[in-house]
Length: 176
Image (cartoon, rainbow, N blue to C red; front, side, top):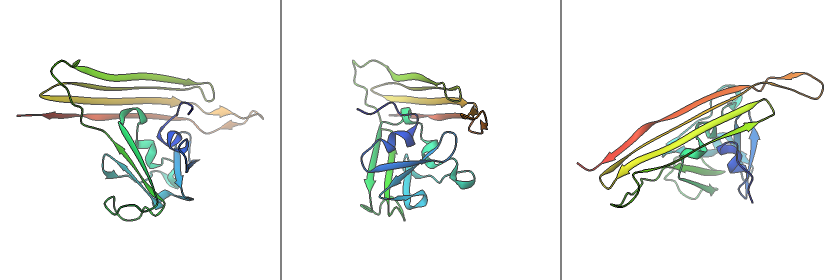
């Protein structure tokens, strides 16, 4: 059984054949088939995402709030050219699926949650909400997280604090 994932990079490294390297206070850069960084294609809703900050402290998976995606597909090696150039190590696709609402379905779907970690006093909260009916839907999601620096066993402060705020513009799809 998989333990609870702290973020998308952490979830990925729990999958068979995928590893990860911690790049900063909250980012895990995936490694597939021994290849990482720009040798992997990371696509969020069909858009290629690069790592940010010096030394990729914020890898592409740091921009993929795990709880807001419906599907994650891992392709090891080059299996298709449709996801862009490169990707000799593999491709990771994060997707949101268009929800279907039938006449008797509840008009609201979603989830919310939170997490606390004593190391660095880290805390996180998220929500993923979909409201709709058979004519259309509205989706919104958000995430907030914060952690402080921590002290190692010798009492030295380790600079690992971070603050993240992510939110998705509502997606609206309706028949006219």
